[in-house]
Amino acid sequence: MLKTPLFHVEHFKGMDSYEVQNKLKRFAEMVKQWNKTINLTSLQSDVWKRHIQDSIQLLTYIDGKRILDVGSGGGFPGMVLAIADPKREWHLVESDTRKAVFLNEVRRKLEINCIIHHKRVEEILDTFDEVIARAFSSLERLIAISFIKLRPNGKGIFMKGKSLHQEILRVEKKWRFSRTIFQNQTHTEGYIIQIKEISQRI
Image (tube, rainbow, N blue to C red; front, side, top):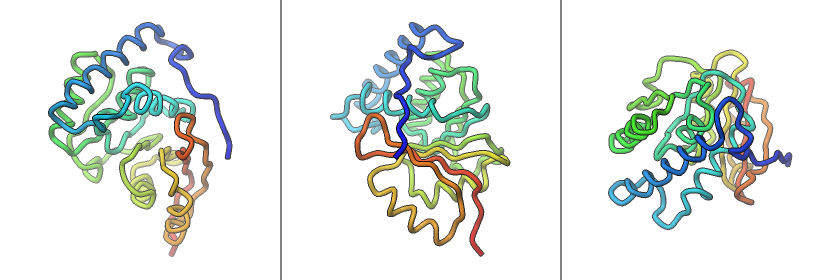
C-alpha cells in the first residue's frame, strides 16, 4: 500500500493556520454540544482525533474545484475540508433533517464557504470534479453514484475500512474502474481508495 504524509493544518495555503485551527476547534465544540441531542458521532469518540484529523487527510488527494461530499452527517469530511480549504466549491449532501439543520448552523455561525443540500444524493442534478465520502455506504453504491455525478476525468475518493478488498471483488463483477489505494494515516485498519475511469460491465 502507498503511504502519504498526514495533512496538518499548518500546511494550508491561502488561509491563516490560526484561523483554521480556531474554526476547527469551534466546530468540534459544536459537534460535542449537538451530539447530546442528535446522533452526530459516537458519544465515546474523540472528535478531534477520530473525526477531524481523519477527515482532513483527504486534502492530500483532492485537486478539483467542485467537490461533492455524499452523506455528510456531522460534517465529516465535508465541513472539515470546507473550513480548511475555503477556495474550493464544497457541496455537502445530507438527507437527515436534524443533521442538515446542524450543518447549516455550523455554516452560518462559522461563516463557512459551502453549500448544504438537504436531500438525497440521487436528487442532485449537477456534476462534480470529485465525489468524496466517509462512513456512508458500500463501495458499490459509491461507484454507482460517482458514475452519474462525476464530470469527465473526475474521481471518487472514499474512506473505507478493513473490508475494502472484499468489497472490490464484489464491485468488479458489475463495474470497470481504475483504482489507487492508500493507507489511512490515522487508523491502521482503514484505507482511502481513489477511483477513476468508471464504466459498467455489459
